[in-house]
Structures are given as C-alpha cells and as structure tokens.
Length: 427
Image 1 (cartoon, rainbow, N blue to C red):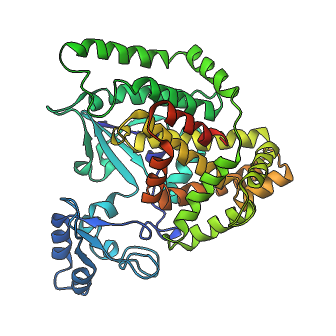
Image 2 (cartoon, helix red, strand yellow):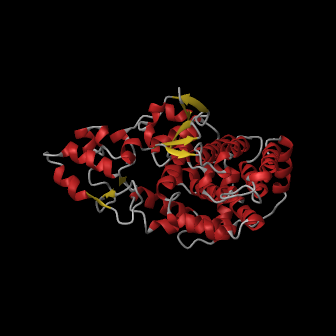
Image 3 (cartoon, rainbow, N blue to C red):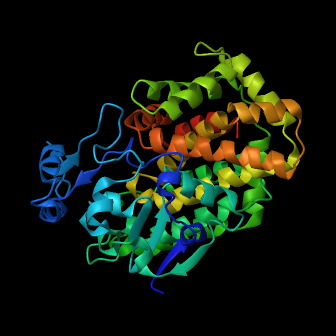
C-alpha cells in the first residue's frame, strides 16, 4: 500500500450506460500531444482515423501538456459518445488509447510530499452517491497507487528542492481544518466560521509567497503557526467561537440573493437538460425567476424548521462529507490565502444547501413533516445526489462562480470574514 484515499473511492465502479448522467458531456477534455499521437496510432488505417483527425484539434492558448481539445456535438456531448452512452473509442481500442482525462475521471490524484492521495469528483453521480451517503465514506484508508489508474499523471504539491513555506506546512494546516470539519457536536455553519477565524489568524504571516519563514525569522514563524493550529484543535477554542457566532443576527434575504444569482448565472452557459430542469424547479419553489429574497428566505427557513431532526442530521452529513472531500480534492494552496479558500467553500456550501431545499422532493418532505423513515431517507438521498452532482459538474468550477466569490470577498482580513457571515446564514 503506497497511497491513501477516502474510503468511498475503494467502492467506486463506473456504472457506464446505467448512469443517470454521462461524463462525456459538460466537461472540457484536453489532450496532450503524446496521448494524441498514441490515439492516432491506435486508430490508424481504421474507420475512426478521419474522425480523430477532424474532432481533436489544437487548442489556441492552451498550457503546455494540453495541446488539443475534443470537439462536442450541438447537445454538448462528446462526438465519440455512442447511442449506448458509452465511449466508442474506449470500446474499440481500450483504456490505453484514451486521453488522460477520460481514462482517469472521476479520479483525482495528488502527491503531497512523497505520498499519493486519490480522491473523486462529485461531478460523477456514482461518486456523489458513495461520498455523501455512507457514514464512513470520507475516512482515509491506505490503497494501492493503481487506484489512480495513471499515478504518473498525479499533480505534485511540495516535497521538492524548491518547496516554499506555503506548501511545506500545508499538510499540517489541512489536517487541522479537517479535524474542525469533523466536530459534529457543533453546527456545520459554526465549523465553517471557525475555519474562517483560523484563516484570519493565519492571514498575517502564512500565505502564498510569505517570507517570514526565511532566515532568522523562520523559527519564530513556525512556532507561531504551531501555536495557532494547536489552539484550533482545542474543544474550548471552538466552543468559544461557536458562542460568538450563535449570538449574531443577520437578515436572510442577502443570502438568498447570492444563491439565486449563482444558479441564474449558469443557465445561459450550460446545455444540460437535467441541470436546467433542476434550476428552474428550484427557482420556482422559491417564487420564480423574479423571486423576492426576503419572501424566499422565509420559505427556506420554514422548510428547514419542518424537516425532522433525523433528516436534518442527514443533511449535515451531506454538507460535512462534501466539505471534507473538497479539502482533499482541491488543495487550498491554489488560493492566495487560507481565508480566501474558506470563503469560496462557504459560498459553495450555501448554494448547495439552498438548491437542496428547493428540490421538489425535499420541498414535499418538508411540507409533509416526514419522519426519519427508510423511505423518507431514500427520497432525501436521491435528491441530494442529484443536487450535489449537478452543482459540482456545472457550477463549482465555473468562472462565473470564481468571479462572484472574488467580488464578494472584498479586500481580505476582517472584511472577508464579515462578508462570509452572510454566506453562513442559511447553513
């Protein structure tokens, strides 16, 4: 065993044509020059040679290693997807001929120092199901590197001769964040608030391109970092932060307005019928495309209130597992500061929660005051998988979301944390 993964990845098996969605739609597939040449060699002299030549074309301005892109049909599906919802190239030439993105999805492999981690993308319905629904889904377990399928393609973070302080201490910071997320005795929103406070405490000295860990200041900076991380591992720290957070009173209308704006911004850019249907039904449940934020907030709050305790705890598990997977799947070192990363995560969780409570099935469960029965839980689970998967596929990585998050976050520090409180209102 030379790698680790959340337990749900050990249970993953592609559903192929039995899947309710397809990874061959809605995702941009870039192809490296070596992989393109392998594919051309595989199809040479056969019926697919001309199609490969015509439909995999150079991508202007692509970064090195992603020289070409696979074309899509008018409906947004890959040109090589067949009538059975399977890849015609994979069926004819095997996995070895596929581009890296096609062969490895929904797996994501990252090397932290010298250790390989394999996580999954919730843009895949089966990954969403496995990650959200099993109690032990996000427990980290040892696995073989073969789980990544192509471990040589893993992204590397740190461990090299030129590693900086930002990446050198990243595993310790992430470990603290993950432990905070797992503190289930606190409300989920309070845990995110604690992570925001952690980010604020780190803001002054631990960030990308920090220089305080150099030279004579290094020992003091590392001691300060260790002190901050230790403080946020103590129950009394989190309890105190929760008390301050619980005392805050904020209007719900702005929260609704942000969540609605995120979904509306994607309607014109996404060609998925499933996504359009979901968003339209969610908006309608809150008052339509021209909903009034305050009225929509009252509808949302009433639904949360009417959901039984057992089902509310189930929603907490969805959000917790999604947040843990996000920290595993998306390195926080891609952000300029920890607080920026937490702010964007809070925005994602807000959109997911608002979408889930606008799903027709969940609206009905709340209206019924359904008890936590096996039948009610199955209905809630199915709605959650649909919401989380479609948001992961069509919203979470969209440029519009990143641009909105950047604008909402403000100038950083106390201002960013203050604005983050609005995002936590509905959680």
